[in-house]
Image: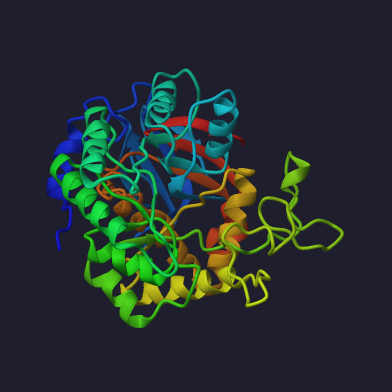
Length: 414
């Protein structure tokens, strides 16, 4: 079984030249964030300290004072500094509403997004609109669709074509969850994995049963888009995730209704004041869940919500806290979506666990752990300032006041 190593993957990222991964933002400022509670993301918490940013990167994040002469000062008294949120699977693309959507994502604290799929050219266009300064938005990592229903050679050709365009991620490639992937799916998937390794493309697989997840790993895949929501994941299957250095993204709240949250669009009130439970699309829960688990009478059971929460902990424990990453997937109101996920994480994980999942683990999912995910010297200055102390609860994760992306202040709601 072959693992796409960082040393193999890095040259392809570097070959993108002006790609968003490593480019320094020309508008980046030299900044000192003072009087901040600093949650580094690696388990370290600084009660009150200063973050120095120069040329778009973090120079230091430490307790006490520092030399701030000549720097733009951001006084973070009463606020907490945290690495910018990373969403490793969200369906985004260029379009008439891109400006509003990207602004909303930044305001929710998201600074890096891996597109979940869709036309790759649209992903590239959206990325370019942001990088050129046409619109404000997070760092966009494009992806491209790949179809497992063709031949192995057609799949290989699709991988080569996306690599030629500078796209280094597949969108989610779906495997049949029940009774499991077909032999043809696995044959084509193995061709995808082989060709992707040759050209430096990361393969991201949508496997929402334990059977499909294990089949993907056996085929050489190490990045799984969602937790299994069809069954309980055994300790043995979780150990396979860990032993292959694989990472599974959350969508931990799939199947769970949201309680009493209103947004700009009335259709997004998914647990309304009349106390009737609704799924995230605003329709009746659990019947509206696409691909719902059903009983012998065909009635939706809503078991997806329980499976994902427990499976998240099983997979986390098997990997010593390194096997679970973060994504939201959905495209409803961004703060509602963030709260939806955090409420479910909060059942099984401490706040420090959540910081690790959303920061360094998700950065590692993207092979960008040396660039983002923690507030450490040398990393890109993707920093959010939250109003209050998120160590006290998830509610403070919803109170982003200031966002820096690559050292540039892109949101300031003080």
